[in-house]
Length: 318
Image (tube, rainbow, N blue to C red; front, side, top):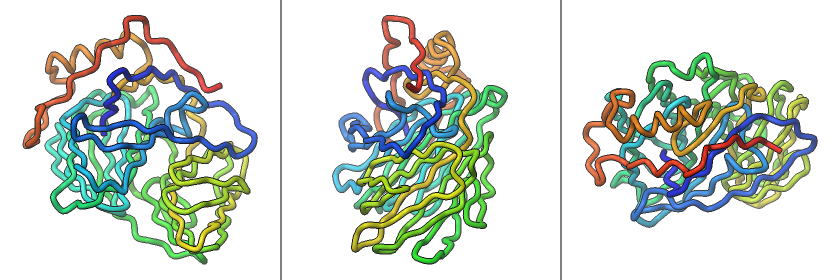
């Protein structure tokens, strides 16, 4: 998915220690131009820019309007992770991949040195509902080759809960999908009024992104689209569904990312000069990003927004 903000802010991101669960509230962002859907963005923001290597999180839907139509756009220095609760998205990229994103199946695309892709909801999608996530690549791997992986995790039934692990491992189940830093990505659904305590890696910081219901995370309440942040050091995570209906959430985690990164538009980089170079190459049609074939919409590719008139400066987690 593209960051289609007309004036995207720059983000210089590094981890900071936390003390108690903190609630990050989402901001609404239109995605996709004239056929925009509204997404709720919880990462990055001024109060926190990363959770592990997770550096971007958009929650969208249920959306019954015009759907999603994001023309080909570039990425560098990151992996995109697509996860749906409802609906279907058609993905095309400059590797030649043509794939569908369906509920309960993860599509992970590695941008590395450069890739471009498009995303459109299909005619079979009266409702679109899911999340789009980005993972920052460490410096040693950020110029790696393009790649694409698909994985459909089997649900694991736990007392009072159902779990699908699409990245990393949790509760004795693991994903084979390759990441460049240790990560956790899982969907968890709690039964009505149920409570579940999960064993977690104390080296990880964690985020709980709530989709439906009202859930207490270590005693702190979350509403839908909220992201609850849990600092490293905990060995267990206590989750309680406070409603009469199932509550669904994503669990994200990883060790604090040790490198500062610079984010602007769809690029993850290390310097202002890299960002400016990536933008210029995209506008020039550089082979760095390749081409998407078969995208039926217009425009044929998203133009890059203008670089800010001042030098892009770092932004730190407070």
